[in-house]
Image (cartoon, rainbow, N blue to C red):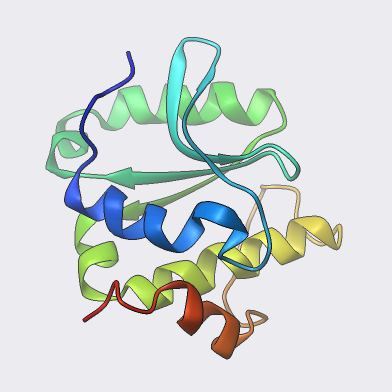
Length: 133
């Protein structure tokens, strides 16, 4: 079910991702795939970004089923906690852009992804400007 209100952390992240603000990749908010609503989704790369709050602590098994389903659809899933987004939004966006670039370059298939190191710092800083302060 789509939500009318985003969490503050989702709002922070959306400000950086919308309008191709992060690395030039287009993300959608609350994208439906199967029976699931993804927080953020880049259809070009089949990349899902999830922001998990404290409610996910109790739903670990559900999150695993969801992630398995999405991976079966060829979707790469990366997750961040609310705290990570709150404490280091620039680092989170760098990670997302790094993963996105690896997928685009054919270097990632979702099995084990580590991103961030390839992200252009100035471009990303511009995407999250005004969000961190």
